[in-house]
Image 1 (cartoon, rainbow, N blue to C red):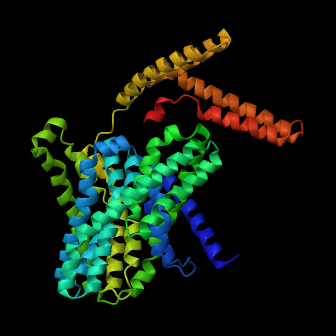
Image 2 (image 1 turned 90 degrees about the vertical axis):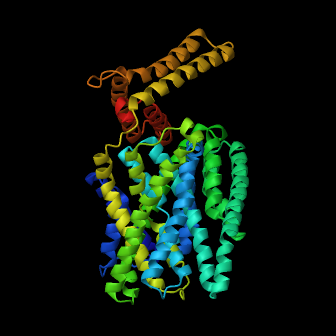
Image 3 (image 1 turned 120 degrees about the vertical axis):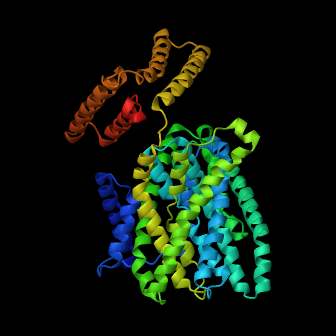
Length: 527
């Protein structure tokens, strides 16, 4: 077994063990994985894995962004476009500037452009951590949608800004630097527009290909290739590969219900869940594993390093509040917006401001700095500390902050009522279609289908009943699961006794699994 393969196996094993421990302790896996990586980095027998920025930014990031984008609600994204844009663009640029100014003021020998590079590196919150926390805590749907939307786009803003800052440092002379920054806006617009066009074109192509096949394996193969087909050409022409992947994913995800069959969607969802679980786990573990090498590389005096690091971390934390609150409420000074919307609750805005965890993209961006970049090792160290403080500190305290602020979850009863209303409309459409297409079907078949559709529509209303008693749908699910387990046992015994071939048992098992997945939801599923 080669050393590389052994290291990969160890990393995956650690991800599985730590993630399982996190679930048992009621914690989120990213925090424990990063802590585990930090501990392993100082053990003599721990895996020594160097973070390769190209692998993260060009290999892992497209997959994670595409997996998130295909599940993002496009109507919610467009409805919340203003707060998302203020965070994904405005907040990134604001943090870039204030962090750059603070760093340059404290360490004047670091050029201002290089200081802005650090600002761009630590500006974007992590796409994984924020949404994982928001969903785990059951935060309001609007908060989750804003954090998801921000995390989909802010990496593109930060990476393009970083590219401009690196070019400014390379320019050297003040006049060249000034000219480079004057071109920053144009370069960003070109990168964003190029990514938008390429992502849209690849999305349309992918949607067309999905619509031309009903083979789940081909659909999944296409789904794996799609983010790279969007990213690579955008990257090749200096457009934003991140924007291309996100736009492509949003389009395909929005069109997915009409593009592919149920088997393809089920298989694709399972594939992306596993892919996300493993990739997210590995990247947070890798972040922690870099600490020892980062510490060894720092050459400045530690009192100076500590002071500068504390100043940057404080600027990042306070700067998000300084940007988020005005961005949330100043637009309501405009009468048109005030007539159309209600200002968000202060508690929700505070949670969004506190949910600024940084992650692997920031560290990969720091490692991507040229080796002769001014104070490169110091900038990498500061980036790591920002990630550790925000990911562990903010991530672990968000539940407490949400509880102290009295953040209200979405009303599950309102969700059930909305679902019930749409289900009744769906029932009428199904019954009309049944009557139109029944043809010569036997009456008992039509009656059975009609009764089955009506029963499924009525199951929603049961979830509004007394929570202390078991409703019929829950009783049905509980008893049918026991029956399916008994049926599985009989088929296993028949297979073991040689009465049926294993191929038949697997076909029956698939039918039983699908039936179990289709059993009616209970009230616990709404919580």
